[in-house]
Length: 317
Length: 317
Image (cartoon, rainbow over all chains, first blue to last red; front, side, top):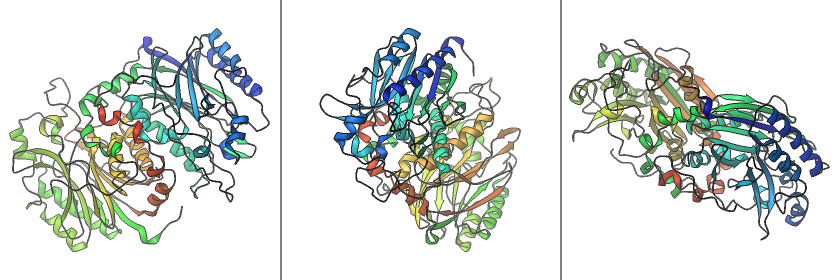
C-alpha cells in the first residue's frame, strides 16, 4: 500500500459526554464549539458530532409527540442556538456532521443529520432509516427506546455527497449494524462514512450481556470499513445521562479494518486521524474491485424480502 | 439470553495442515477420516472440512485447464478415493461439509462443496460465486491465483438446506468477505453457516500488510455472524504447501460475534463447539428482527449495480 500525500483528509470525531435533561441547548452548543476549535487546531477539516447531539437522548422517556416536538426537536436548521457553531466552522474553514431531531414545516419528524461544508453551507441531509426500539409504552422497562414512536422512517435514502475533496456517506446509530447501509455508500463511491450514535449500555428488550454492546459496535464498524474499503468516523454521545448509561467507544476506522483512533473516556473528547484516502483506492482496485467480483444476480433476496423466509429450492443436486 | 438444551448442535471444524503436490488423495482422505473420528468422539454431529480439501491449492500453479482437470478435479462425487469418508460418517451417524474441484459430465468446472447428512447422503451442493484472482499468467508473481481461469462462476446461488435439525448455509473462502453472502443465508433462515478456505498469507496483487490477512478474515466472520444472527464454522487449509504459506485461524463464531473456538496450529486440528441455536432466535427476535427493521426500498443499488458508480441525486436538501 502506498501512502499518498495529496489524498489525505484530517478527520476528527468529537465525542460527547452526557447531556442531561436540565442542560439547555446554549450550554450544549458551547461544548460543540470548544471541540470544533480543538479539532481544527489539530488539523481536522471535517468534524463528526453524535446523533441527537443537541439534547439528551429523549427517546428513553415516555411523552406525547407534541411534548417531544416542543422540547427536543429543531424546527429550523440552522437556528439561533446552533448559529455559533456554523459561524465558527465557516471562520475556521472546517466542516462538520451533526445529528438532531428534525420537525419539518409539514409536521413530519425525523432523526436527522446534516453535513456542513467548510463554507458553512448544509450540503447534504440524512434522515435515519433503521429506527430501533418500539412505539408502545413498556411500563415495566427501566427506560424506553421510542424511536419508532417519535420518528418516521427516513425518506431520503442513504445519501453520498461530494465534499471535502472526497465523497462522504451519512448514517446514524443503528444503521451501522446493517451491512446494506455501508454497501449503499460504497456503491455510490463514498470514501468516508460518518456516523453519530447514542447506544444504551443496557438492552431493555432481552438479557443481552452488557459487554456485547461495545464488541458488536466495534466489529460491525471494522468489518464494514474493510468490506467497503472506506474510512468510517463514528461519534458517540455517552456516559450517564440522568442515570441512564450509554457506551462510548468513538472510533476512526481505516479501510484495513483497523481502529486508527479511539476515545478512552465517556466525556467530551476529540480524536483525529489524517486519513489517507489512497488506501481506499488500493482495496477497491484489488480484493474489493466490485465490477470484477460482485455477483448481484445471486443477491436478489436482499431486496425481494423484508423478513427472513423459507430456503429457496435447491439447484444442481 | 437463555441457554436451551434442546436446541444445540455439536459442530466441529477440521482444519487441515498443508497438502503437498506429492500427497495423493488416499493419504489426504486418511487424514480426514482421522479427524472425523476425533470430532465424533468429541460430540460433533456436523464436521466442516476446508475448500479444495482433497488436493493442494492448485490454482497457484500455471497449467492448462486440461492438465488441471486430469490432476486436481473430481469427475464424480462420491468416488473411490472419498468413499471411506462417506462410509465412516454413515457408520458414526455424523455429517460433514467438504470442498473439492468439480468437473461435471458436461465439461464444466466449479469450485464446489457438498453437505453430507448423517446417513451419508449428499443433501446440498454449492458452487463458489465470488471467485478471486485472475485468469492470465502473471509471470513476475511469486505464484498465481487462477480461480478465474480454472473455475466458472457458480450457477446454484447461495443454498440453504434443512439438515441437522436446523438450516445450514454453504459458502467458500472469498465469499466470506462479501456481506451479501451471509445476508442471502439469513434471509433464507439459515442458523448455521459453513465455510472452507485456502487463504495465501501473501497477497500477490499489491503490498497489503501480511497481518491483515488474519485480522480481516476474523472481523469479517465475527461481524457477519452477529449481523445475521448465525453460527459460522470456518475451516482452513493452511501452513506451507510446497513453500507457499496460507493462514490458519479456523474458527467457530457465535451469533454474539464472539469466537467460541479457534485453532492454534497450522496443522490438522479439530475444534468443537456445542452450538446453542436458541441464541440465533434471541437476536432475530430483537435487534435483528428483519421483518420489523429492514428497509429494502433503500437497498436497490445492491442488485442494480455491479461496480460502484456516481452518487444518487440528493433528496430533501
